[in-house]
Image 1 (cartoon, rainbow, N blue to C red):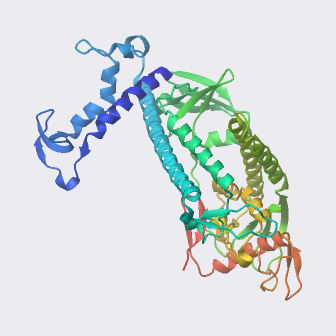
Image 2 (image 1 turned 90 degrees about the vertical axis):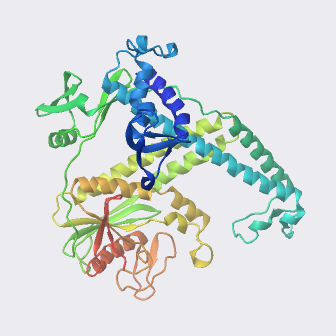
Image 3 (image 1 turned 90 degrees about the horizontal axis):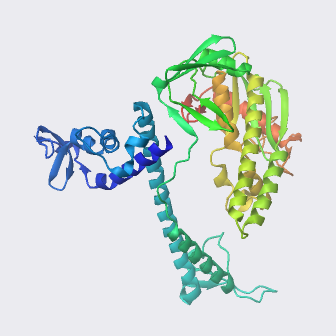
Length: 500
């Protein structure tokens, strides 16, 4: 199968150059005339210079049938000996051929995207190299930093970056190092050859007519692969429950081979009825922070007391990320350092996924089974842009900015949204503005002497800052639900208040 994909990829890739010569005729200019290929009077859709052809002839040249003709010989048609089709591909079924064609086309698109990124990367580095060379050679293009007490080496920056707060000044030696590094990088990228990939995949996609699923009894199912049926057992109660409700395979499945065993992957679909939250709903209010990964509590109105309060620390995941980040920085500059550093990145990613999955499951389990209940959390979209706040009170310390970058806020929200949707629990996002600095007792503007402490100067109320934020988020939901309509975001699977 992999050899078939490789062959079809090569044939499809060769067709791309010929396809580029044909241009689609605009809709308002399409007219009926004699086709240059079939000599029949039809609507001419594609043109190549003065030659115009219909859509049927176009897809005869470049469609899947054209690839078939290059693979399978007949009595009246010979094929290229290089394909060795009689030996290797004569037994391909229609489904296998379609799967190979689908995979090959996906690889062509992926390779084209990689080539575009490579060209853009080279162009960006060349522009950077020009700026650094100007800074080194042209004295009119640079600004010198005044020497401070204890400094002996002169430092410079490019004149176009003089108004930037984040621009630093460089010594001549540092500038020369940057130029040398960029030249080596451009040379290395120029030698990079994005050739036809060698397919060594261990998975096969199955078309809908090749796979079917049915239930024999509790915990036992049978799956149809082509014409044969196979029995298998589901050990987990959750998986057994899901499969019992969703036995229709509407999408494509796949089989993959790993560690001497074969695994069947298939998507299942479940119909859910998601209620729209109202002011009568109880809420599970969640605040995501730095010292505490999440703080969540239950509220039943603006004047109700919080119940079932939970504090979940994010110190463990932040410590693991910080530890591996230090190891990654030590790897750079060493032999094969980049490859080794990628392994550490995968370790951190899997660990953060594990934490986010377990934490989101814990939150959804608390809300599960409760009538008229919703999950409310603040909308942290744009938090990365806030990390680079310019001046004054908005400017964050380097330590806080680094801790913000370690937080998996969006990942937790995504996992929470789809798990809650499965249990028919609505998730609502409220605006984060004012939720961390407002006193939940009197509503006055408070202060935070430390990152984890909140103090109200008006009423003297002191409490954990994340707990105060969770209270404000829940109360903000009840305040806004009275006069603002809710819209459901299909992409994020959450409700948002419509801005007025």
